[in-house]
Length: 100
Image 1 (spheres, rainbow, N blue to C red):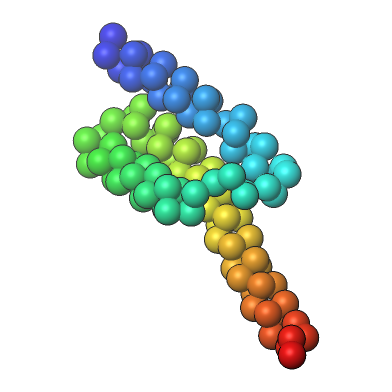
Image 2: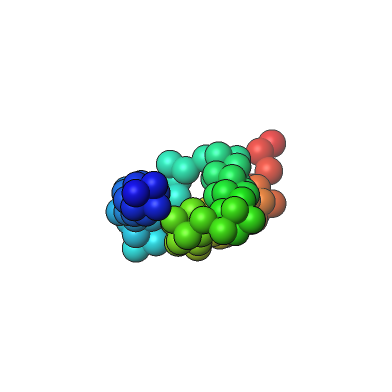
């Protein structure tokens, strides 16, 4: 019975994350996402996955594997967009005319 409850909880929490993850992946819009929060979230999910493996808990392994994959994709997009914004900002700053 507890395994069933674990699988149901894992399915619900992972599926609840899916629409937002798919929206970010589809639109590539990461402006509203905190980089620090997503680093912490992804690290936490990875830790839960390791814990699930150590405990040999199928619900934890399945849910956190899927969530970690999606979180890593979103984190990668966020980092990519952050680096692009910094590069673009630096380029604009160095090419701006000097006011006299």
